Image (cartoon, rainbow, N blue to C red; front, side):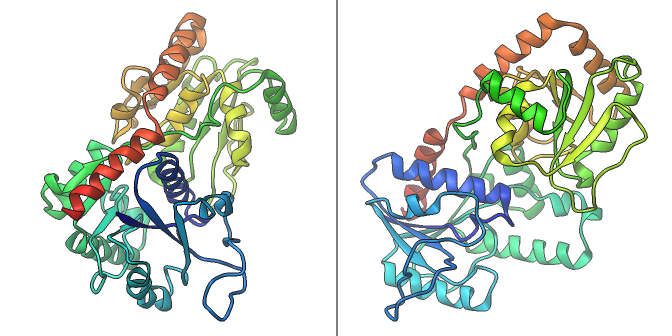
Length: 380
């Protein structure tokens, strides 16, 4: 089977989707399965008159696409950006040129008609529909229309949790039998970091030895405000020797500011520093009201951090019994959970051990194998 996978979304504008596509593509290649892969990418390098790029230098990405695109079973195919009109028009011809048996779209925006082969699309969540106040009317209408068209034109749909599958099926009246759940996983670099590296990262970010960590954007459904309120109510948060509550993540609305001496917002941090930040934390807290998968708690678990997270969306499905679960809209319950974990070293150790075991049950190799099975069903 010749499988076309669209890597044009592996760029820093789509950090979560880019990580998913790059990790999946790498795992598919490493399986050694008897398939050929066509990886579409957007190049910022000049092209020969033949249309082939002079190099595999991809635009605006932190990932090593060049190594992946040079794999022996991969045909690298440069294409215009996916959001351009040229990108939409060119895709059917490129897939014909590549003799693709199947096209995997990792985003809901692709040509909905005229493609020469079956389509598998990955849909991660329906947050614009579930949280309409977080986006404009125009953005919601575009999302709804594009999702409807993607569901109409795709032979199979992949999503990353049973929760997301059920929400998509209910909201868009699609049979759940058309939707396959394939869990994601953490990168291999998410594991307990060397103490010397942890110490260096703490020094660089001016962090104390004792801190609580939350890695989340400032989108309202991430619910960072409830965590801040819980920390104000927490007995530990009111102590003069309180650990520092450290917030990290992408900010669309500027840096967060709080009138609390034991809270600091780092904003976006380098991904290379995340394993050490997770590893050095006393506790990782994730108060999100909804996730289609929920990678940060899994990354924290893989690094050995004790985890508290919301009983919401896919999070219970992902963390299992390896984390303390709380109501995301109850700051009092969250404060009590934080105090309980901080006061009990044995509980922190038990959560750490359980979290590492839980994170180890998710792997990109298994995700790649299950994704290949979805491709086979789509082609049949």
